[in-house]
Amino acid sequence: MTSNNSQLHIFFIPGLSPGHMIPVIEMAKLVASREVGLPEGCEIIDSDTHPDILFRVIKALRLLQEPLEQLLSSYQPDCLVADAFFCWATNSAAKFNIPRLVFHVACLFSLCASHSIELYEPQKKVSSDSETFIIPSLPGEIKLTKMQLPADLPKTGVEAEYINKMVKAVYESVENSYGFIINSFYELEKDYADYYRNVIGRKAWHIGPLSLCHADNIEEKIQRGKESSIAENDCLKWLDSKKPDSVVYVGFGSLVNFSDSQLMEIALVLEASGKQFIWVVKKSKRNEQEKEEWLPEGFEKRMDGKGLIIRGWAPQLLIMDHEAVGGFVTHCGWNSTLEGVCGGVAMSTGPVSYEQIYIEKLVTDVLKIGFSLGAQTCDGIVGGTINGEVIEKAVNRIMEGIEAEEMRSRAKAIAKKARQSVKEGGSSYSDLNSLIKELSLKSLKH
Ligand code: UDP
Image (cartoon, rainbow, N blue to C red; front, side, top):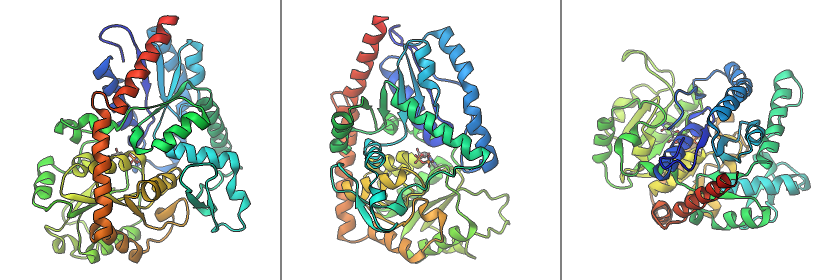
């Protein structure tokens, strides 16, 4: 990405899944709106990616180092912004004497929480996997159990050894980087932003929510990540026919795959809840006659007008920003969570992997805009059987009653602050200005 007025030239290297690519592209556009083309053509990891391919893609990340260094050499940018997964990026930037910034798809709350757990190891001081401990030194008395922490990575086997080495290299590369760019805003996680800067002592810039780049452009809202599996008009017509805050959106991001029996359980729960819903399922239908094993007989007929199933890719941002949507059942992917925050919805949280457990805590214990689906382990609801009753209760809790109203009203107040933060003079607007200024000054020095 080059600057119109020729000062600053920044390379953005996104990770290879929608959850990493979408915000990096948005970030590049945002920076471009102040200063600064976009990389063309990208490969992607999503819910269709076979696990065998996944390891090959992870290995292939290394192959990008040489071509990237050739590009750095040809174009001599002033800065390299690379996803945390690119464990060689800090060294590559150092070869060209430019700063490497890490774009990490996470909030500062989760960076602070994981930092404290690595440093103090409170999980080693409890007598059982289910005993709760408080995350040491972190503001807010945040409680977790050992079971909820990510399991140690396997140690033996060629793939495990490779991944362990890579994780170590990622840590080192992040540690030696110039700082973090965070897709979040200061008012959302003030205490943790301060803790990160003052206690952990690292540089970080809040420049989000990046999805708000599309606030005024409906086309951009729809064309995000992948082509949507539903026509925009059909989706909007359906939502426009509903009352405000009457629809729950059920979507688990771009990577999660449920088994047929899990999907069946979710379908039964949604029907039993009596709520209006949009449910995104990462499945495709070859023809109208095809019998789908994961769907109860006659489900869609019974749910006609009440529930909408989107098979494949949903225009999530468009949906989340619609006033009819009042609740979100989410896996706590950071992008989805932030989109939920900006949509002012109450959330039911079911984290499925590393870091998402921390994001759940931010939503439920810090912001108090959601309820946990009660996953006991870090692979949460995907790793085990789905407890229909628990999910039904969680859907009801975010859609009806005083508690739900209170959560939604807190969520809407936070959503307002999110919008203010990206406007001129707002915290994210100013933080991006400071980042650009600091990079420009560094650039002038060499
Ligand atoms: N997304 C979407 N349509 C879908 C699924 C996902 O637009 O059907 C977008 C979603 O809005 C979010 C991103 O893909 O911006 C998913 O990122 P997240 O961090 O929430 O989860 P991940 O997919 O990385 O688990």
